[in-house]
Length: 540
Ligand SMILES: Nc1nc2c(ncn2[C@@H]2O[C@H](COP(=O)(O)OP(=O)(O)OP(=O)(O)O)[C@@H](O)[C@H]2O)c(=O)[nH]1
Ligand SMILES: [Mg+2]
Image (cartoon, rainbow, N blue to C red; front, side):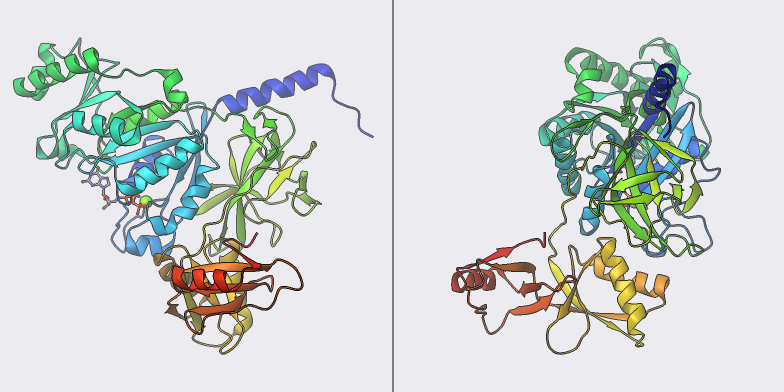
């Protein structure tokens, strides 16, 4: 038996853990579609020195694409579909950034990602303010107690008045908005931002997109240098704005930010590389390092606890054509993860050796020898890991389950050529990712019926079957709007009485009965006719 480590060895380990945790920043970028998350992500990578050239969301065929939109269908359509993890080192910090999809059809992936981070960057389109999906995601952040930094993007286009935007954040989201810098003009008239803390002017020069302007120090908004740089009219406006902000405006307060009562607000234009560098600095200095987490039973898991723990929040197959494997994205919550270590698989009650541990940069991966709380690592353990699984070493722990969204749209998948085994395997792999739920009809054609949250996911399924598995597939949409798992009260419960139309009885992957129904009317009918049966919305 090995000896327990000596006292000073243990305190040395504690110091290392504390230091590693302290320097970690793990955050997700969220917003309504098209606000500029992926563009901002790309520019943050550029300023962090993690990439040399920035790609674009709508790159020309031969052009560079944004690192986080690595999937073929993302590049074709210019939207994000799947959350992408990007990890890099910057000025002594270890940063993990997760770019999420904004479209509500992919929001389950975004919700799962929000479980894996310690804070959030919220991007607003300056012309649009708080949009519907941003509001929904904000509510999720609030229940998960995630501090939020705000980046108001696209100031190079006609924008709402900045005071109106501050007011909208406070009114609609119900948090204080503390401007950290202030824009001078907008659209064609956009001249730059004034750093309210540092008293410096960052001047925007339209023609010089991509170049790194340094902020110019001024004594205050009334400094004659300001007029030289942006003109007298803009200076007068700035003086007035700063007076209002220092009088009645909200000032940054760390405690309030950490308690999700306040969001620091920055202005800029991601596409034009403007205001990105100060924002990156703010992420490093303001965003919190990994905090304690609660297990399912309510025990506190400290990030500096020497025993490893964490959970799988995402599975993605075929990320790299050279490695056709399934990656389980694992958020480390405590301890140190080392390659080849043995861990306990909480759900299966087995021991697992972590032989393939990667860190990710969009599609690219590299082997990592170790990881700490806050890190998101990719584990390749074929067939052994599912979304929501907890892994630990030492004292048993289980993290709360990850809720699955109920499917609201259904379709039959018809493969073109018939290589059934490969097709079934492909559909099952996509089901493991949580992209779809698979059902088998009881009678008629044996083509699988799939359920998804949003209609765009059908396009993703067809595109991925084609590009990742070489399977041409037709998606025939079905008129159903929901699924229920009937559970009989007892063995004596009579068999189901169903309406003649508007329902379909299918089996799930575990062979259980599932009812698909076309509207609430059928569901009510079924519930009334079968009083001794419970109809569960989710399978487990
Ligand atoms: N004018 C202008 N356009 C921008 C700016 N930032 C992003 N865009 C454009 O806005 C569009 C959407 O940008 P994305 O970065 O894909 O937005 P997103 O939030 O990642 O979108 P989803 O991932 O699909 O939710 C693209 O055409 C960008 O080029 C900006 O600062 N100014
Ligand atoms: Mg995007």
